[in-house]
Image (cartoon, one colour):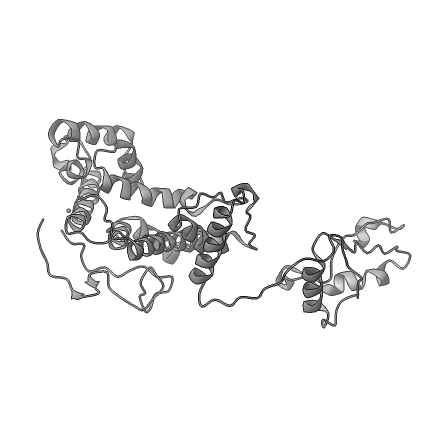
Length: 349
């Protein structure tokens, strides 16, 4: 500041000593409180007018009044009285999100326009449970300032797997799913698989991928990865035919050998770049959120996804830590092959 102000000290600084939260970023109350020492001829202007109601402003002021490193301020509630402060305790973020979604549904049913409803959060990550709760309640919404869960690229990749399971003839979903993660299947190869499916498999792209040996002039590594992709989805499709829950099917699809979770786990564990490891963990958390949303839906609905193939084998659910393995829902350690009624028996489709 002194360098910016120069010899004459001509500088203007705006700050609030009551909102210096991130000390690890260099936000210290001393930076504002010592301003008068560095610039003795300064003029201090308190911006005391606030657009909150008096009850809300008084409660907020009481929360910081005991702090020692602050300047006392007289704050004025420009809207006067009439506000209400409520403190509600919840057992989990899901309970909180369900309560907020219920309050929004009640407001909408009471005639309040949807455009008049706004939920504020300090971070975009905190809106994840609420987005899932709103989706369960069937309440359309937009996420401002960041991408919503279902708008994020990696989640859309996961949804492509599910779309392909629901409709094996969906060429667009196939091309996105087979390319996430990269398997060496380019546009030309993908088009050949689509043609093979239409000519010999009644449009079934999963089956065509699993029988990629029928495609000539293809590099063996690419053919092997394509067969692995199709074979894995055929096993998940068998789970669908056995009427497994949506939550189970989503986890199985994401946990495919060589699939999304495995790819991002390898990025998280092996990348030499810290930012790539951090991004991989973010993606894994997004995929966990998708699994939790599917499991929550399955818990409140008796519906099942459209049928489509052999049980997915004994792979543990993905977790941010290496030990012990935990389920995608964040619960106790578990294996996807073990259901609520005990270990599954093998069967063919």
